[in-house]
Image 1 (cartoon, rainbow, N blue to C red):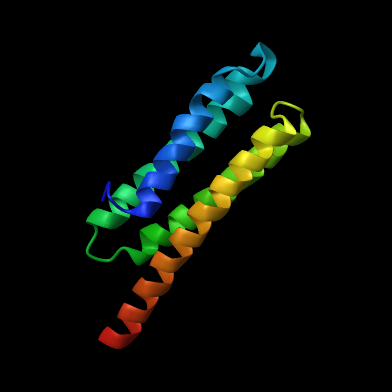
Image 2: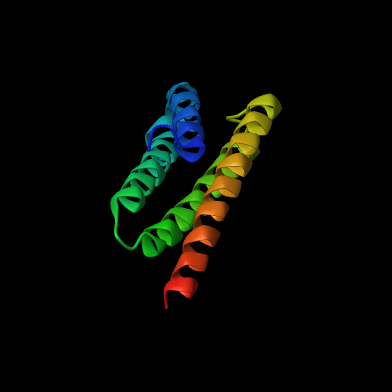
Length: 117
C-alpha cells in the first residue's frame, strides 16, 4: 500500500497541505483550514479502506467524490488569497496526479468487475 504511487502522492499532498493550512490567517484557520485538512485526511483514509476491501469500487468512488471536494476547497482558498499562485499551482499539480492515479485504479477495478461477471 505505502509503495503505491497513489498512496505516495496522497501522502505528499497531506504533508504539504497540513502545514500550509495551519498558516492561514486566524479568521480562516478554524473553518477553511480545518475543512481542507479533514477532507485531505478523509481522502487518504478512504484509499486505505479501499485497499483493504474485498470490493473496493464503492470506496474508490467515494474517494473520487472526496477528491473533488478537496479540489473545490483548494480553489476557494486560492480565490480568497489564502494560497499564492505558486502554492495553488503546486496543489493543483498534486491533485491532478492523484486524480489520474485514482482514475486508473477505478478503471482497473471496473474492468475486473466486468470480466468477473
